[in-house]
Amino acid sequence: MKNELDKDETYIVSMEFIPSEEDVDAPYLILSKPFLLNQYSSTTTIQKFIDERLDYMTDIYYLEDSVIQSNTDKVGPIIKLICYKCNIL
Image 1 (cartoon, rainbow, N blue to C red):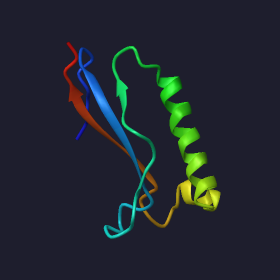
Image 2: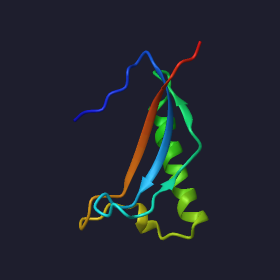
Image 3: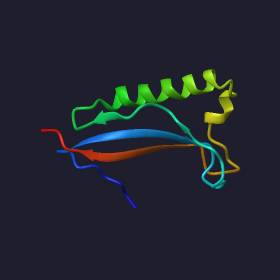
């Protein structure tokens, strides 16, 4: 299933770090406060923001860098973006 956002809409986005899709009981971390996203949002800036938040997460919680790297034994880690349409007048 392909998830697509309407280019004419503005969204409120929150980001979650999920270490493994296979372990449904595994805790997850919210990577940032919600932010706005629309057709004028730079994909480069968004990618840089996600990378910086991952680096901050590993530093602040004293995690090994390997926690954010792909693992061949399991599905994950996953950065889940939750998007809600926002009505801006």
